[in-house]
Length: 180
Image 1: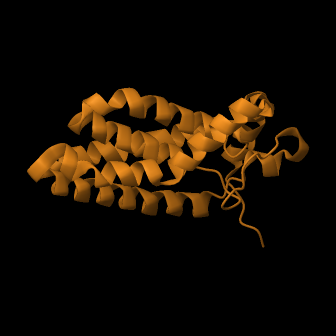
Image 2: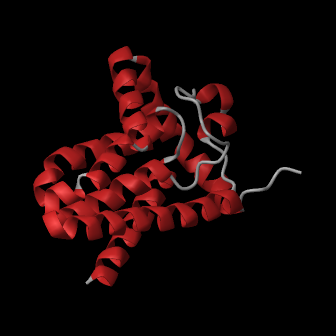
């Protein structure tokens, strides 16, 4: 038997699907679709691994501690993200609304809540804002594009992206508070 999402998601789906459809419609333009796909791919892991690996170069003797902090924070966030995703079971918009919302990128699973890509983008932006704010002019636009790509590719609802951003923010703030 297929797991059932909470009823609140049924109501949210009905409220959000038209906005998701409008945003996803822009992906009909090839250059924009390519941009969304690139942002999504970068949000998978390459940029964040590079950012973690760059910590010793960016911060000298404190760099290895920051490398460990970033890695541990991201891993703990993944554990919570996975627990939420597998327990709440909100189906992706392209599954729920079929022909009305087209999936433009292969999904790893059938559930959308929360957006892990957005969670990591916000998490790393907040950590970077604290430790290396000079990198933000590059990271913030990328994080925004990653968030937009998730909806634009038909993989997430806006509330999935907002929830992912909130979780990423909370983990980063907690990490910074614990690290002192």
